[in-house]
Image 1 (cartoon, rainbow, N blue to C red):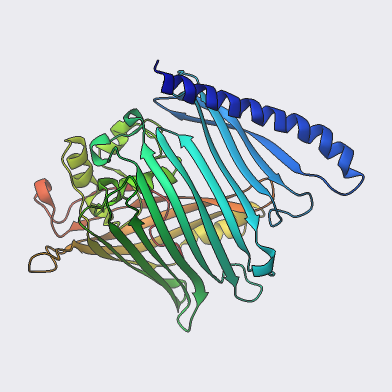
Image 2: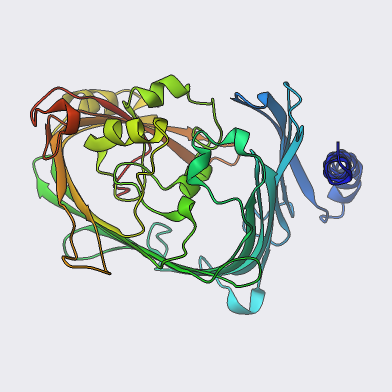
Amino acid sequence: MSFKTHFKYLYRLLLAGSVLVIIGINRSYGQSSSKKGIGYKIVPQPDLWYNSVDGVRFGVRLKGEVPGTFGDGPHRLNLGIWGGSKFPNDPVSYYMTFTEPIKSLSNFGSEANVQFKSSIRTGYDDHGISFQKRWQIGFDNANYRNIRFSLSAQKLVNTRYRLFPFLWSRDWLTLATVTFQTNNKNGLGKYRYELMFKTGLPVKTDFFEHFTGSFEQSIKIGSGFVFHGRFFTGISSEKVPLQMEFNRSLASPIDWLDNGFSRARGTIPPVWLKEGWLQIAGGPSLRGYTKQDMAEFFAKRKDLNPNFSSLNLEMDYPNPLDKALKKIPVLGDLVSMRSYLFMDSGSALQFSNNPLIEKVEADAGPGFAASISIPDNKGHMRSVVLRYDVPLWLSHPGADNNPFAFRNIVGISTIINL
């Protein structure tokens, strides 16, 4: 191994050792300081996952906080460190954030904070600092506005973890990002929107601009019928890195890192993806074209576009199974079922030549979703959503040559989040 590889390996071992020291200090210091009402609490949790490069990835997650602050106080630590059973080239990986509230800019439900992030895992380095300010509307924590500024440096360092490495740039990305989010209610019902602007800083990156925006609205019609709509658009300048471009049916490659199932090769068997019946939701999300797009990727053909806009519509109708589940104590609070009709449409955008809209593609059919909510160690509910969509109609069926046919897709996470 080169000196650089030895250094990285030694650095990660030292980090792992530091974690163990922190745990030991916490056990002794936490006990001795509990009588005085001060101290710092670190809660370790074992963690186990799998991908085909690391093998079984085992490690520990640590949540650190001042006792009694319930995740809202100062000095918040979120740290995970893992080792792989296959002893890959980078056998130790980690993820860490440290969050410090800014008291002078914070009040109940409306915190301002600074966060430091460092991560080296699944072949990707990501380090940065951010400032975030939240404004909660009343006492309902589902209604808020949030703005976030961040600076980061990122790099793909090991292509073995990527299922489609040809969709990735190998250069360092130095980024400035501004994100604005709102969750609230209007006269129609719940709505949310998110605006995100990224620019490449000319340190080790070519200058580029990248914008995404989405708006979602939910409307209760009555008698169990609910309409959901989502508009998405993404616009990029010429030198945007390939992994940030858009695919019509799947999340952009960079966004696969945000999902534990898609973060690394092999957690989901590649053959499932190759068959085209499993969708990683995100971006335009024209779900009916998943099979076509996966065929392009596995043939090592680029199927990304720097500019894309889409519209996703869903109409919920009464689900008898969900009504039956709601009557079961405990289980009814943890599991919910949806049945709906959907339609997606969208197009790549071409700003350099006419026409602006290249080709409008669409799909439609019935769908079903199951949401399972699991409480964490603090009692907060975390939901896992599985969708089963049947796009019976495609406007451009491709090699199928039949707009109407039985097609089925299992989706991980929702497309419309209301």
